[in-house]
Image (cartoon, rainbow over all chains, first blue to last red; front, side, top):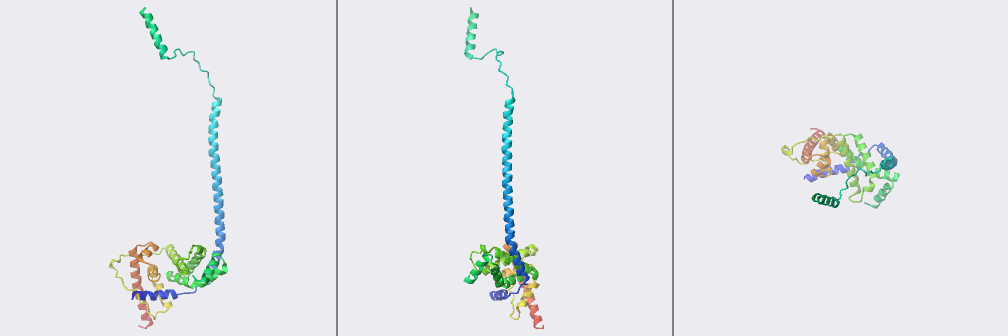
Length: 114
Length: 181
């Protein structure tokens, strides 16, 4: 019973075929002719974005490369300009050598004992 | 799909303008019928028909031959109509189905002509009309309707009950007027 009633409605829906206005096809047609050019535009935009991204990447890479080597070369140039004073060992009175100190101690104790 | 239709679809895939016009002429009334059932104004229905055909022609490669081609086009049209309704803030009143009685589907009397039924549909509020279309005509289940419209299953059920009730009243009123009561 329920199905019969719904069946009638379905039948009506299937047979309900009103005619749309002629301008509908015109707007579909114009949309379809604009569609490929829109697609071309979007492809062009995408290509430009890609090229810009590569360009930015190259610029950033060059920047990083430059800053790295400029920074290192600064260190090298500092090294070059730095003056090294010669090591003066004259005022170093004692060289710590345990065996020699031990021998010296023994020598002193022998002298003191005499 | 029969060979003629397959050949026509192939022509449309190659963006043959004459083929597209032929396909449009073949299905324009069927799909416009769907648009009219869902939308109150003829202008809105024509806008949805335009959007649907543009989508059909541009997405033809997506049709993999599963199910009927007409069914695929109808589904696109129903989705476009629902998208249009959502954009225009179709509102569903949240109601508890607890106090609502599950009434029978209305009896669409033989005296009612095609134009009469459309006239009755036009008198239904958009929410009732959408759920009645989806459930009683398209054959969707409440769960599917709830997913499609972003509403709860209970809301879908309550909208259907109220839509059927309202439709019954409208049919009786129409028949009474026709019979001179």
